[in-house]
Length: 119
Image 1 (cartoon, rainbow, N blue to C red):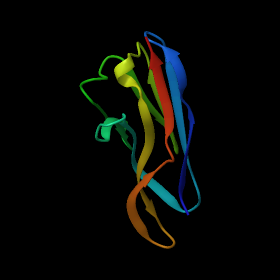
Image 2 (image 1 turned 135 degrees about the horizontal axis):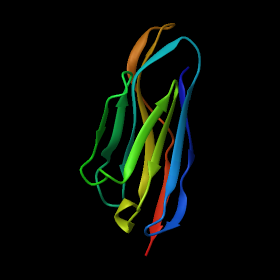
Image 3 (image 1 turned 180 degrees about the horizontal axis):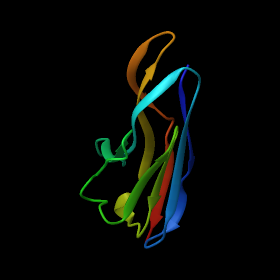
């Protein structure tokens, strides 16, 4: 069974930085894309950033120039700089993963980690 485990997050003042990390664990799987979504209170879940197996990236307009996503094998990092209170949300690691035995190809989600940015 493939699992995504997140670490990082917490409380930071506006203008500060945080680093989120996520690792996929299990056996017999391959990863197509990994990324991060977030959900703020009272708002819909939204894509923050995604990275492909070839290193290509996509960012939400609201985080371009401030956030950077990187990947090392089955681990994905989200470096968040110049944070604002609007970045406060639960951040979820996501991955489009193919598991060989038993075969499946689907999206996996982590349990979420809270990021709170104070004024």
